[in-house]
Image (cartoon, rainbow, N blue to C red; front, top):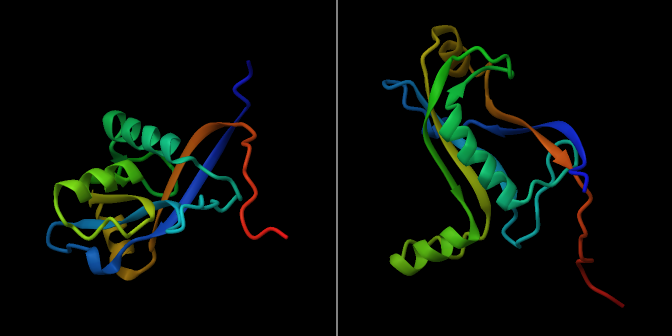
Amino acid sequence: MSRGTPVEWSIRAPIAKQAIDEKRRLVFGIASRIEAPDGMPIHDHEGDIIPTDVMERAVYAYVERHRAADVLHRERPVGHVVESFILTPAKRQIMSSVADLGIADVGVVFWWVGFRVTDESVWTQIMSGELTEFSVGGTTWLREMEVESVGPTA
């Protein structure tokens, strides 16, 4: 059985300016939104959908094996991950049952990250506003997905 065609992919998401810690050179933000509040998958810039379970496995592999941050996928380390959390429906349900955290109604699936920036020139670019977003990239094997029709019917 064929796994499909290997393709490179990329997701861009803004750095949360209100979540920059200048003293410790930390930047935070949502690296990827995977599902909308209504449960519908979100398409990336190329129009593809990354299923929640696939993104979750990719996030864990990145944190376990790589952890390095670079700029524009040039594979030159400029920092490292200090925080990574992917909020899935299963985790939301568990968290809501443990404590009333108010996240049960959030409904969106996303990946939150934090990086310590160790490269002086990159830190300057972030602080000046020249670098404004995270860009997550990877390789996957494309395959067709069956999608149920959504919306009103006549």
